Image (cartoon, rainbow, N blue to C red; front, side):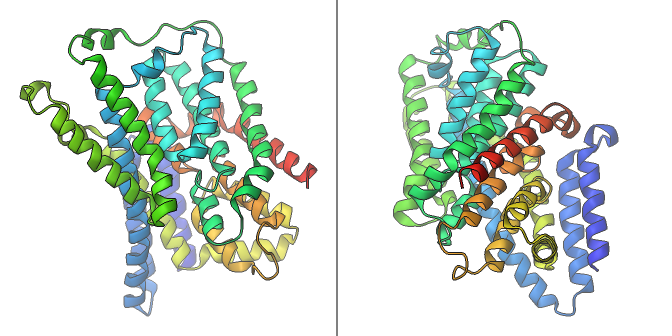
Length: 420
């Protein structure tokens, strides 16, 4: 069964990678792969009820991510529809591409530590789409945003889902992870930033001509109000989680509901055509991207449920032995297979009695799992979101971004090992 399951996953993964060649939407392939993987698992299983129970548990976890994604995308789209991002774009006065890349990368790095890498990527990619006209430049910027978001998320307990898992599990503590991983994470961002900036030259023309026409329709008060309320809602999500201990999607949903109520009241006296409300905006979010996300996570869940990922982690531990090499290897694997089950398997393999809280192994796992996802466009939630919004080709990212992400990943790892 395991061989058939792996073959099915590899074939599906290949079709996703060659989307532009086979002309089949990656969302359709991902959904098909996910269902086929579980079908193979259940047909070869002697305990159907157990498989169905496992699927239900995974769907519960996956749905949290999907609800979070839907909520975040809707909030960002609502801000954009009110031209709220003009508040930021008008503050960016430079017309130099390299300076712009520097500014946006630093904002992304620090913002992803406060929000999380997924939400930050959605916000920043939307912002880039409002600034840059040229597709090639925009793709390079988005590629760098993915790297910066993953690097920024790695050093914060709430910045990346795997770091959060280790934080909740007691493997790491807040102050220590910030102190130990900030510099390596920063290096993993700054090295690719320098290298990618060498590929970008000249000036750019702002992509704001269409928005200027809307100025008379959308009052300045509404722009500013929706922007600051929307950003406040996004920042409130990790605060809500810390206070209530409820999952992040609950925070994003209550934030969305507040924005929904506010916009309904804000536009209640306007004509139907002039109203910009969540009820209208939610129809415009990118559902194929969400379904792609669903398919990928369901397929990986099948590999986890059969024990393949745990077996992989165990065999690595037995054959490699060296904890630093294991951590770096898990980072590479997290670019191919979702980092969440890999980290979950690692947490189950290594006892806290032997590797107590804030042991260097847990810190290095947090760094490698968080930043390693940048090596491929589908290696992280941030990458998948960017891929869907900007329609990035798998092989374009592999040729143009992966090598720089790889160098940055190793540079950050080297810095961490050096300061051990």
